[in-house]
Structures are given as C-alpha cells and as structure tokens.
Length: 207
Image 1 (cartoon, helix red, strand yellow):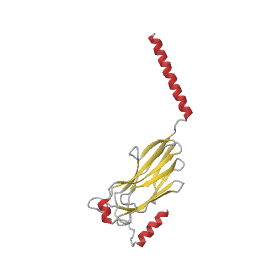
Image 2 (spheres, one colour):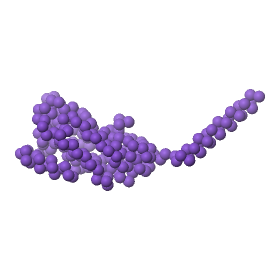
Image 3 (cartoon, rainbow, N blue to C red):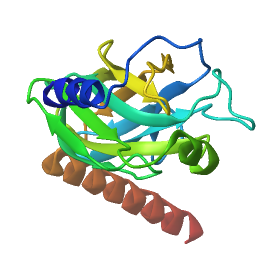
Image 4 (spheres, rainbow, N blue to C red):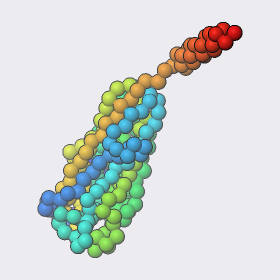
C-alpha cells in the first residue's frame, strides 16, 4: 500500500478533506479483451488480458450522483496458484499524473493514479463517462476455476477529492488443460488411420 499513504499525505498538504459523498452509480468491472465480458476460458500456459473499466461517471450537468474521477488506488486479488501476473498498463483520460502499479507476488495487484493539475471543471467537461482505467495480463498456470476480485481496500476520489462510492463486479477465469504433444500426435495418427480405413472400404465397394 505504498501509494495509499502518499495520496492521503498529498491531499492533507493541499488542505483538502476526504468525506463521503452522496451514493453514486459508478461501477468498476473486469472486461476480457477477447470475449467482452467478465468471463473467460483459457488454455493452460496461455496469456490473457482483462481491462478494468469504470462506468457511469459524470453526466451533464454534473451532479453528486454522476461524478468525475481524480484519484484511484485499486487492489485486485487473484489466485496466484492458478494464474500469474505478467504485466499491467494504465490509461490516461486525464488521471495520469502519478501512475504506479505493482504485484506483491502473493495474489494482489495495486493500481494507482491521480490527476494533479486538472481542475474539477476540466474533469467534468473532458473526462469520458466510461473508459478503461488500465489492463492486466495474466498467464494460466494450472487447470481449474478462479476469480478476479476488487479488494475492499480499493478507493477512488471524485473531482473534488471527496470519497467516491462505487460498486464492483468480479471476473471468472476457467483454465482448460491442453493435450501434451505426444497425446496430440497419437490422436492425429489415429484420426489419419481411420480416414485410410474408410477410403479403402470405399474403393473396395467401387470395384
């Protein structure tokens, strides 16, 4: 949680306070880059990517129920025995002045970024209502079923640096085993032999 304390200190120095705002409809979800959903089926040893998407941000005019985003500090939990973290990228959308991401090696990834120089009015006028905060790429380690979950310690602040309430949606990952090369070769050989038998029988019938 390196960046969490940094953000709080920075806000305190700036004379800003963190207080709960009105309940919003903002939501965070995992969207697989191939399926476009929060569900994905992969093969053992393959890499796969999830986008972290924020939606239902500001409307026009902006209200407490449709805020903009100025700071996020997100923690993603995953089963490190089933999948391994490979890399991450963070997108801009006017919240890109202090990007930071890391993996603790035991099943939690932290993604942090903030807008240092954009005013609330600028964020309200220019930030999209729905956008991809960042992407995380994993690699499947073993067959089975797992989930990606936003940890309860995840936080976001609106354009006024007030606490932003939001809902989250988890993701499911199903890993299927791939036949070993020797097994695949045997299957292919058997299929080829079956084709030869069928062709031979057809030729005998035609004589």
